[in-house]
Image 1: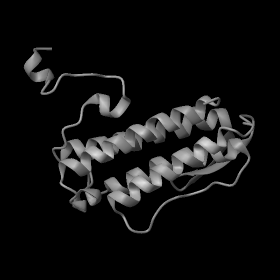
Image 2: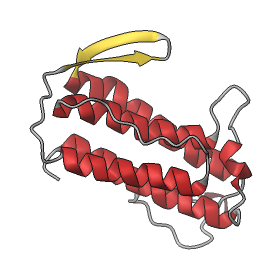
Image 3: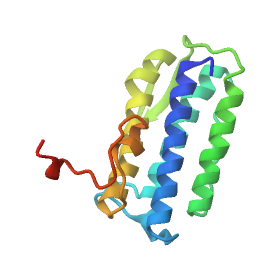
Image 4: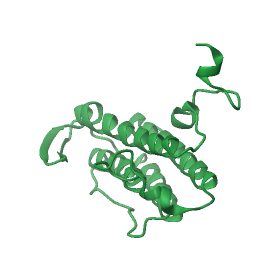
Length: 171
């Protein structure tokens, strides 16, 4: 990938897809977990996944000079969430061929508050932190429901042997 901002989103969307596969495998396809929340006032796992994909598109589309796309599906299922992530990944790859303009001003909403800033600031101060937050929420919801994930499932870098625990390692 020639555009670093796209490469970052693609890397973590791919990791999220793998994480979602592990969730589905662990629960034997039971989609009730998709509606689980870390806290009653937070979004459920399925919406967290959708928000992750949305942040990638809300960031990369304006930088590429195209309207923001969405691949969100009405029915919340493992197959539809994976399709949304796959469609988002393919679209981001197509944007990588376009000219990027990090000087463009991106207007968006931070919850109910409107924001507007140059793309580089938008990425660093708003998009990346929120993107990682929502990936983290998917990870946290899954872990809180017993899905055996490691930090490597989140970042693709950490490698721990099966059954590793910091509690048992003495550190």
